[in-house]
Image (cartoon, rainbow, N blue to C red; front, side, top):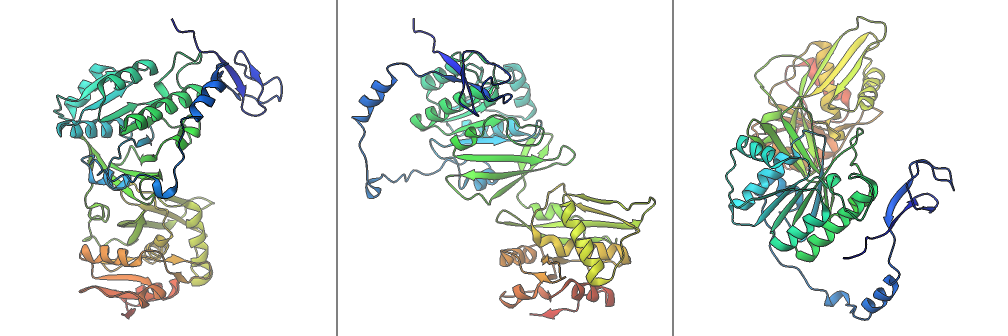
Length: 464
């Protein structure tokens, strides 16, 4: 019987080694810095020397080129975020708040791949087999070849993977996996780091695409050591709000593709479905005549989205006026209000200002500044903006409308959805070819754009 691997607790601050865990390091006095680590065997140096004798160094021109096609996950939105599909031996870490739909999405992906004849193994350390069965029935899944394992032991999991040789593996979640070589409980930093490293190495050795589900902390960051994010090839963040149906899948790291892509999904009664035309869902009903609404052309990754910006400016009933923003940076809202007061002479000292991005999206693109400003002025002056008109442009502190990235893609999306006009920065308008049946109206300053709204029900900008 093999001897049990020895371990000790190492302080991550000063390197102090202790045979047992302590809350406070007796050497440097730091709290919660002792992490359990395995002590290398005495003959580890000799094994390393022998292994080096078999190593062959290759030049850059001698490196092999991997030309194997990627495996489609069955979701075009997920394939877009991954850079074209699953890569053999690629390890993906996906994180998100509890209940956002991570397990549901990966169970559906597993079912789709299994229905195509791929040997798929879905491992859950959080749910029992009966719970997974109930979820599959709710999703109306039919994948008899999908193999399910409810297990948390690292040794058993690696043994099953080596014995079955699956073509795709899902581990839900990495924080529940533990190794008997450690004395600490599952979820400890040492356990998560060791188990993550072992599963990643196994996936690369066996050329198995693998998804690891990661839990998040209260502040939204991934739980566990940051080394886990460095181990994997791709880090995906599943974002959304429980009060809204839309979910965004963002890429924080991707060794096999771009980190600028965003996938948009919808959570429904039958699981997670991809949104193929998100702009049509986010712009709402354009037949209404309410003031304070403006269509912004935002950029999520490399994808342009048309989002309805809603503003409400109303006299304050309290001493201090409110400044609330949903889906938009509150500090940037304060800056835009200061610009409108300084450059346009408007007064918001006695007005409550509320901003909302319809659909539950979080907009970080500075190109929505002009749309937010026009929506605020529209609500303040009770003037309805022209329908079928979209807006994009960044606003500077001097009130100028600055150009933004990927303007051609934004205009193409506006034209595709059948809009009549688009307001854009002057610098951008000079170098853009006008699509058919779309008026390009330029604005050099926010004052110029607001004057056009105040004088007429239609924009009177320069036609390109």
